[in-house]
Length: 165
Image (cartoon, rainbow, N blue to C red):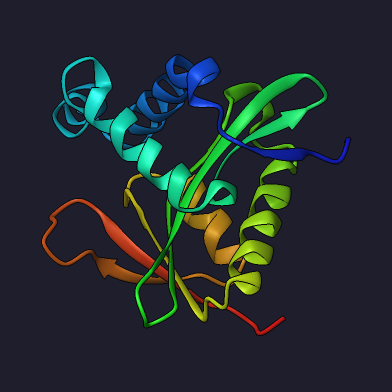
């Protein structure tokens, strides 16, 4: 397996791909994924594109495409939240043909290094309780399942303490 390359998302060139990846992540996680994606993302996913553009502007290395050679095989979206040094992972995505082959460990390592570099001491992410593959992956990396995310009925919150660099 090659070492992957992580580059800030180029929305001019890859907005459609970003939407495709995010929509697929919703479809993998929820029975009503398409409907949920449409509600959250706005008409033609414009709300999502606008949100992603702001995230990229605020911290280019927090929203990246994952390259294996010339091919984009994944996408990561994160942010640093406030004074409490909390990192949040919005999207952790690999294309279907690369899942279950160890690539996700490299994505996780990238996020952990980024969070350490910016001083994050605690990371969180949301996961569908029906997505057992994702939950098992996160638990293998030390994440704790905190149960149902406040304000939701069908999303769990997971958390990880980040070791100092």
